Image 1: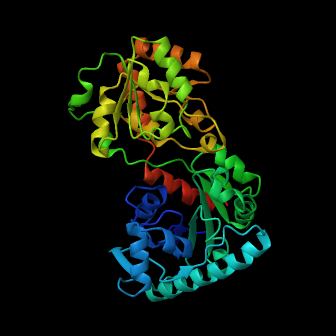
Image 2: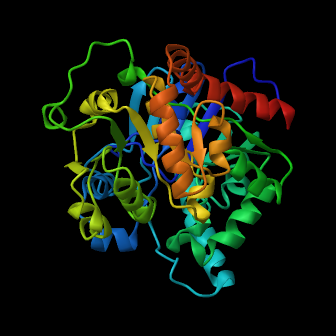
Image 3: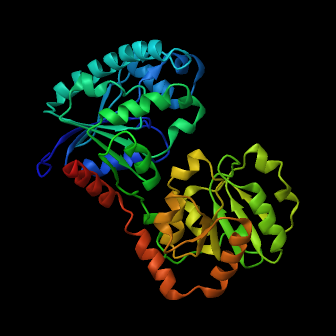
Length: 396
């Protein structure tokens, strides 16, 4: 497929444009729109969400359906966001896969009809379709929209999550098989996709590391200034679904002279854990995103103590790039995805290895290692990731 000329691209996936958090799909769309025309399609409202949810995204969808808000929003000269003015049926509760897909086709048909209306309005010609992990609402869009090339993007092992377990395993395998190209952000997910389609490629992970500039003069946050050093720190949501509480407890107990600083909101398991009874463990709570680089700056060693499960094996931990971008020594749980970082991150398979690596990171750090970490993190840009996506299309 020739890609030297600007393309018309339809992007549809799980992440809506009006979500407050950043997302891979939004960043890819923004990068693509620098050279191509992009229509970013929000996920339509479904009937259960209409009944149950009161958040701003749901209110936006309702306003579009009722004609109180325009369905098409122009972001810039090359970029539009479309919110389908339709209400889809909630069907994931059905036990029959056959019946689920019958009704899913109807949902897809209505979505495709809405998308086609606006691509025709914008004069999109023979567009590329980029599906960001939407294995249900996007299942039939290749057949219904007939794009010149269909790309399926996998950034998480979603079929390990409860919502996708019932129908997702079969649906995603089928969707991968019929895609023209599959691109992923981890080698683990690439290997998963290759079971069903050999045109599956690792395209890396982009990150916006502007805020994590290591050369900015930073102040130590007031709530960390009195904490003893060395500081072993973690920044992010504190949830037992992703983090190993027992490992953290053992680390704190076996190295009482190290301060374990945890920055982020806690789930109930963390709130109830023994960590709160240990004197060298410091919970600093949720902090404004713009202050997180200051906290990382204050750490002597950064950690990412993941629980190893079906989801985490293929998960790309963007926080590792943020740590490295500031030149910090990092110790992380060894997963298939973390192999990418093995030359710049100390990878641990046990609590004993965690402690050993942290000890070594504190005693063996150097200015050259700091520079190498920064340089490596800076290769993980959205420009590079999108370039790899186009290269994958050429290979396929």
